[in-house]
Image (spheres, rainbow, N blue to C red):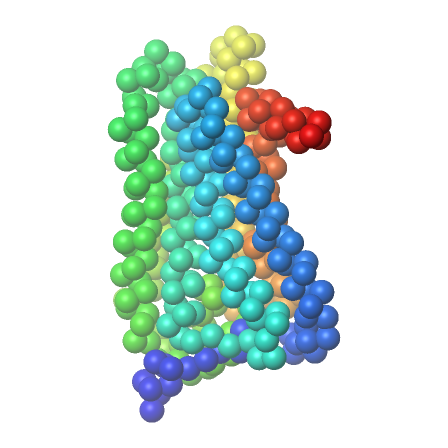
Length: 314
């Protein structure tokens, strides 16, 4: 019977606190309009920067190509969450099938870990550019860029596919999921934690999160050391190109760390704080990336200002 339920069960997904369900039903159309507006903003802001990078030849450099990939990743990340969330706002009951929940969690973590790998590729690009400028044209070739981009999406997809297959047959003892969408709180519904899955989960975190983070820290440490020892122009170049990447990295690492902590603390984590942090994950971060790169990257900022001036003149 439990296997049957595991295959066809539905979860009540919304929002960590029973009192909020009443408020949700009362103001659901308002919430729908707000979140729909946010989703459109995410798509427009990220797509605008991507289009500027595609259109202008002076932005056809490795650094900007990686930025475009990161922003495309943000759009896909949001598209995995928002359509279902918007449907939930308009529904009397917030339910999802087991298979759909597992798929959403798979896509969520694939894109999240892809972001770490893209950020590590960007860090390596800056390291070669600043610390080994004479070798830059030979190291950062088109082939190298393609390998980095394909690996950033393919490696997490393959590793997490194994986890998704292993989780497809787990036995569930609870059918109420606290959260706005399916993430690793999904594992708290299991009757018994699988030692094999836990070990594989640690392997995945090391391989597609911790190791890229260590690479990023190493490259930026080297950049800081070289910049400190170099002339003012090198320090200025390092600050202009590395600061946006570091801000995005700190932002994303904070949310990713929260996602790991929430699984460990389970119900001990305050419900209001859980709701606020979840909203930060789905609202703040996808809008933070285009804002930072649009304002802080000088060349992108120039083209963005010209575009806004043209739109204003019309």
